[in-house]
Amino acid sequence: MALKIESEIQQDHQIKLSVEVEPTVLEESKRKAARRIAQRVRIPGFRPGKAPYNVIQKQVGEAAILEDAIDVLLEDVYPKILEEAGVSPYGPGSLQNIASMDPPTFEFLIPLEPAVELGDYRQIRIPFSEMEVTQEAIDSILDTLREQQATLEPVERPIEEGDLVYISLKAEGKDEPDEAKKTLIAERRYPIIIDKQDADVSEEWPFPGFARGLIGLDVGQDKASEYIFPEDSDIEELRGIAGIYSARVEEIKARNLPALDDDFAKSISEHDTLDALITEIRESLAAELKTTNRAQHENSILDRAVEEASIKYPPQMLEHELEHMVEDFALQLSRQGLGLEIYLKSRELDPAGLKEEMRPDAAKRIERSMVLMEISRQENIQVPEEVVKARLEETITEIKEVFSTENARRLTSAQSLENLAERIANEEVIRLTLQRLSQIGRGEADSIEVVSVKTTSPEEPQG
Image (cartoon, rainbow, N blue to C red; front, side):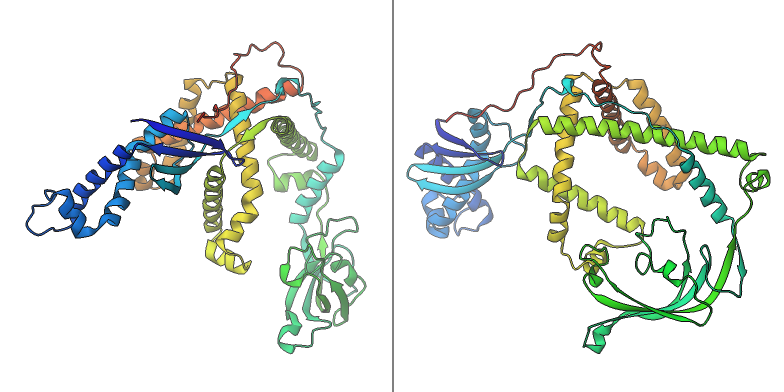
């Protein structure tokens, strides 16, 4: 079968193929299509599939035969087109146009396999700085622990810093003429803690700085405050709206914090002394800092490697990643007792809008993954079989402890375990590759032997 193929690489990493086939090939496909039609269409006087071509043509028409013939031709010819054009597709191509029937000429659009060409990632250097645990961080933990053990005592005095105050709060739009839309917050009772002057109040309700504005008020007193939510506020329905927030103090309670001593340490931990508790806090913070510092360093090296790489992938790959992200997000919502439809409705979004929001993150995930996998290949990163086996056994034990017998049996089926082992192996490859990148960034990988593998991209098919 002779084919004439012209190719043109598209900017979105797809290839357009214009394919001319011999007329005799189309004729053969028409006869094969006619036989298929005769199998499913009753033709009087003939058994299924036995009617002559001219009878079938008269019964169903030339157009119907030609339509099926094109499908038959593509089934037979498409694999040969890919082979002769030298195309390695990412996924199924699509017939874009029938340019001509004399001679038969078809135009296809085919997504190409993703390709990455790394820059000189082994020359990337980013210093690694080990952060020390500060006394402020330890004091913050101790303050939080004391806050958790605070006792409440009703007081007859004006509001002070640290108090727990119960207020009746309502809010109305300042310049809203429509009474139906004027209520921003319906009146109800709220507990408010009066935080310290230097506390982070960015997430304070109803707006930052509201609580400290109550200092000095006594039970029964009112205070009205005007506030306009900024245009970038997380509360979309209040953005740019000027509101009057009215509060009436109903109850004031002092929060008495326990003394920071050995008795306090004994009451909240297994330690007999405050020094022992502080040592545990310091070690825990140090471990967290070490993990955070390492992750930040690894990711900063990877980001640089991504910047210096040439990355190509077809739009279908991005769409697949978006589908996975939406599925993962829906699962996350379900664990919180929410549904994706309810979430979209609350944000006045449709599925397409959600995908558009996720698109930049999806592209970043693809690029980071492609670069990371190519680096693991070039660095010859391999995971010992015993490591995967050990982690698999740990996971199986956890599954049996957490899930019911029926669910555990399902999750430890042969197919499930095979998928789990593959995922564990991939996770280990990623972990080891990130470690290697960190070594490279610190300049400690020069002595590591690397298996040199030339990075190649799919060759552009020739017409």
